[in-house]
Length: 431
Image 1 (cartoon, rainbow, N blue to C red):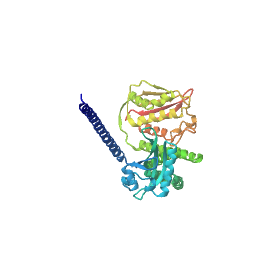
Image 2: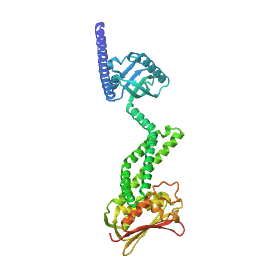
Image 3: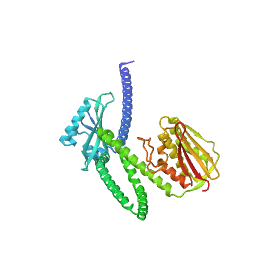
Image 4: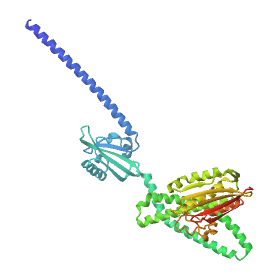
């Protein structure tokens, strides 16, 4: 092989190698293009994603230069993204604000992690906004600290509501004092009026009728404000009880208990009025079904206190107003649980009938009833002398008495031989 032919082969070989290198470079270029396209798609998606978030978001490098933001952040500053990205805090904020933000960023970068700031900011729309600013550091792919990302949450409405609630709290004691004075004045006026009307029987009857109408109206009208005061007291207790000192906390607790008692009392008064005035809906009621409904209603309390429930195997049927009859047993069983004390271990429901009446009994082995209480506990706002410190309205047994009498019967109580009490209820069979 001559030298020229050898040189030609070397050139062809080098040319082939060069072609291979060119193809590899083209493949590498195409691959880089695909990667760049994928990265651009991903960046576009991420930008679209944060643009849909209504909270202002920004991120900047460790030098304080903005790398990006969302539309909400543009709206907050009143600047387009092109005038934010690539610029520092000092380029987009007044010097005093920029200095403060720079100091906060420097502190966060010195101790990487997350921080939350409570601030008040003026947006580009000129309005003042209460905000929470969440900031956190981020790293690059190699784990090196790269910058700071921040999210602003507008809490203006919440702050406004808190201030309104605080104002209501500040005015509450004054309003309560004023209302108490008004009620005291009204009570005094009623006392004087009653004393004057005692001088003549006819005038007394007229006054009694007027007072009845007035009491019904007051009880009805007080229901909404009583429930409203109780609801407000619950909110006050829930949100501000821990913020108050010991004395303020005690006031808050007392207000909560008092408002709950008032709401319960108004509700019981309205039940008593309904018991007296609402027409009875007489229907046939199976005694065993009646006992079952009462048992199921109190099953949780009975199980928690380990109180035995005993029913007579009654197969009879009564004609009565179902709601009223349930109310009798509900009040009597509730009283047994409420006043029975720690020694209460059983509650027994009994039933028997005669030619003229149905007789029910509710018996318990609790604290019982003293002889002095046998008659007075069925009166309005009367409570057992053995029940100090136990919450109650003094209307439950008055309601039981009213229901029994409206059913042509009566109610009375007797002591058990050892301890406890037996409540007897009779209702007429002719209804």
